[in-house]
Amino acid sequence: MYNQAIELLRKLIATPSISKEETATATIIEDFLHQHGVKSFRKNNNIWAFNAFFDPKKPSILLNSHHDTVKPNAAYTRNPFTPDIHEGKLFGLGSNDAGGALVSLIVTFLHFYRQENLHYNVVLATTAEEEISGYNGIELIIPELGSLDFAIVGEPTLMNLAISERGLLVLDCIAYGKSGHAARNEGDNAIYKALKDIEWFRSFKFSKISPTLGDTTMNVTVIQAGTQHNVVPEQCHFTVDIRITDAYTHNEVLSIIQQHVSSDINPRSTRLKSSSIPVEHPIVQAGIALGRNTYGSPTSSDQALLNIPSLKLGPGDSARSHTADEFIYLSEIEEGIDIYIKILRQILSL
Image (cartoon, rainbow, N blue to C red):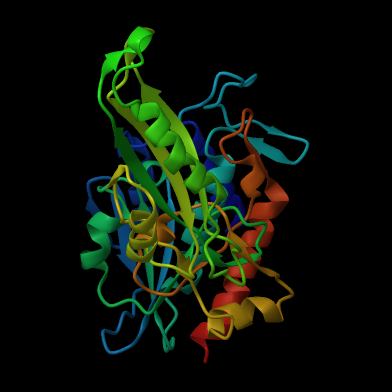
């Protein structure tokens, strides 16, 4: 299974799959499953399958990872689509994020596919558009997957247990003033109005602190105002990036902000929620029993779009994601498959 996982990953790396352009990698995964006698389903560039002895009366576990990638950055010194192996490393775009987790989960699914008398159904979903939180990714096929009890989301975590994950809220804000001639000191400068709100975003501390994720954080990341040096601007636009912990909902954070700032606040989306799974959950306890550590993840994933308890877990290192000359250690994939199977064996035999 390890060798099959490596060969599958090399094919995926060699096939460009930038978000929204994953048709070819979806077909590769589809063909791989068919070669192993698995009936799969497809919607756009999402592929999913159910274990051979699926029983609708049983609870279901979702195994999910994505096969899209970001665009390769300009600092690459290697061809990002050449899956070279050197000194125990497999190089290539998407090798670490999240190809290693993806292929490890696929062969783990195959391991349990034909086993009878499992206490849970096993559902595999390999999905698109994760890197852009697109509407044609996991969110598109959730209704097709049936009732799900919890999920393992494959992302690079060094096979440690990410039991919580920050959500994302992006705000487009507008401070309004009144235009006037700068030389006559006329008008009402929208930049100065925006500065008061920006200072609040910089200094405000939310009272509730997550045990695993810490503080909810806010950063003003874009600002635009003015047309020329001698005109007092009537509008100042700025953008705020907010990373929400499991201590707050998006609506709670929005309510607090609206009580304190005078600018118009326009959230781009409230889809990307924070997520968590109790440390007492059997899947977490199964991982802890194998010596894996728990932590809160600062990065977002398809967990944000799942309304069930989910555990982020996979081979590779998040610090390598989106970097030039991305790679994953072959030993990490071997360990990933082994740990996935051992964790699920404890759950499926309960």
